[in-house]
Image 1: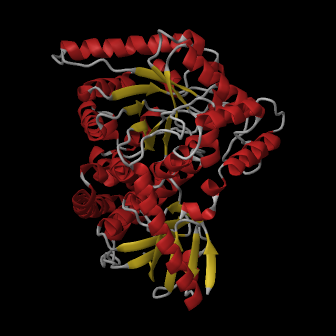
Image 2: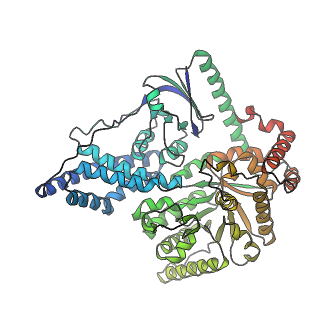
Image 3: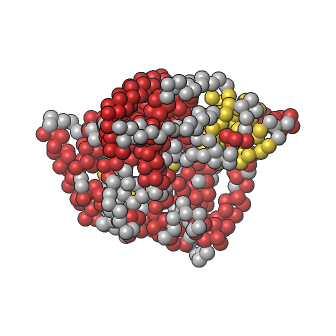
Length: 585
């Protein structure tokens, strides 16, 4: 038996035979061509494009049948890239300018975009290069006369791959026959991982050399709880995992019982749990976690599809559908959060000396509002059921809020002039994620309708720490005295002006920090959907007043390690059964 370790990205336990998926790395021919051959190469490209269009249409159909209309957005980007023509024009230009064959032109362009996206720090945006790479590789395969090997139709196996392109993942997973997924590489926000979570397929990623160390036919156990992958386990291990599966099934059953409980602590403090989503199709997950709303819809994904991003009507349809599906719970729509490390398409900026402190989010909105106005008008129209809210990220000063409200008002007037006179009032809120915004809160009683705390960026800016930089990530700690005091100040200030405040950063979905936030007075939390059940289990088994007493003591610590140790000791001491491994599964 061999044990491999990786990162759990979709919970559950799967046992089945392995299928190692390796499309193969074909040698791309480089051939110089004469001017007379330009037209023939263009015709070869167009034939490949037509074949690719048919394939993408078929995959989109499979996804819609399995998961609904919204799921097709995963590969809609690729279809749009072909339809809007800029990428195709770039391929044609490269062929003619450099006098090279289509295959080599595709390789050159893929290398170019890979290098561009590798410079992006934000992992969500960095992984969007997979859409372009996937499309270009599909065009490559369709150029080859034998078309290479077709995508297999798999049944009751655990798929093992180095990484897997979005369209391939969509095809394989939508068939409903995969038991588990093991990837050597990839990112937590990739479309493949989101698909696995939505379809409840246990998945582990970043398993070093999994695709070369595992062979097709090997017996596998994929532990999507611990991140372990076991190759050809012995009988004793199989038996122990059988027991673990039963415990996990029991845990899921208890979790379903938790969902029936009121959203209330043992001593009567009400709370609200919502979900953070990036893709509209993720709303399907929410049905498994009870009736919860969407506390943060990250709309940046729409920027990967220029047609959708530039179309008021298409955005309107997406937003309205989401609002209807979670009604009467809220849908909080965050406007495009671009800039910094998120240089994307329409919003690609000239390099700035320090982009983390440069033109971003609402600063870009106010500098060039026309594209954002499309999104605002779509959102205002989509609020037919009255549960949609608009959230603006990275606000620094009250003048920005006044300008944003003015633009929203102008958008409303334009829509009314167009005959859309039944628009509901749409609440407007801001993200508190820049430390300076904390001190604005006492002045916002008449300026905003609600607030959301983005703990990820707030802590990074507060401590001057990039949490994705391994050299300094150990300094990113929510128990730092400055973080504790800032979070307490935000909660107190929001209460003083009687504004609802939502926490939508990662701290909301992590057990001990979520409990700390609850003790600080926060009652609205938004998190990764897979965290909702566990956080509700914790919240419904603790006393709010006890949490408040423990949190008040945290103010007195000057050391982050002392504060963290004290808080955990108090929690485990008071509720020992709540944190035992057995209670998890």
